[in-house]
Image (tube, rainbow, N blue to C red; front, side, top):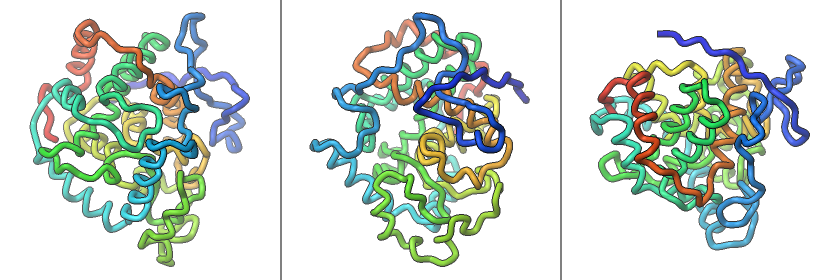
Length: 312
């Protein structure tokens, strides 16, 4: 089943510009459609009173975040990712519905996130409700926000209890040079791929415009949830699946790195990811969502786009 969606109307902001602007002369920025006067407002500070995605502030949490990225950058190699994809492609860990998986996330806290220490279910509902308010007609985008982090169940014992560095954090391509746009880039020097002549050039093993579907991305919750959705017959549009798979690819959608690997479909889907990113990042707050009140709406979307039970 193919779902056609209209491309978003966009407006400019001084601090951001679309990574495809050089080729198309379009500016596609966070914000999307013109928002109502009472639309979602992006705050200046996170739940800790700091700037969002600040990785340099001196604090115990920031030190833990940096240590997380040290481990991630050293251990996420091309061979490691290949093995993990083969292992989890079996989808033999569990059989359950989407909402059941959402409830499992009550047990998960993302150690790589400098902006949030609430259970992940809170973040999913905060971002989904913020999008729903501003884009009431894009129900696929509401559901995408709800499910985008469900792959973090890989941290739980029944799903392998993988270390945090193999599940969360910013994602990046393997098989080519590690761009300096990556957070804490210095730790890549200890990665086994760093000095591999097949992998340490800008393109590495990939031709220009190869398409992100053909690029080996670091393993984590993004790639896993994309696999689960695709293999279980999810009918979200390609933009929704693109958001699920690349929402942590900050070197691309925040810094404009790696765009030489993208094809035209990637650039079109990136427009929606740039919209989604605002809600994914800036909805992280201490404001609670009434789960029972919103649950019936999201259950109806789950029924529309997913089977009752999925293999995980």
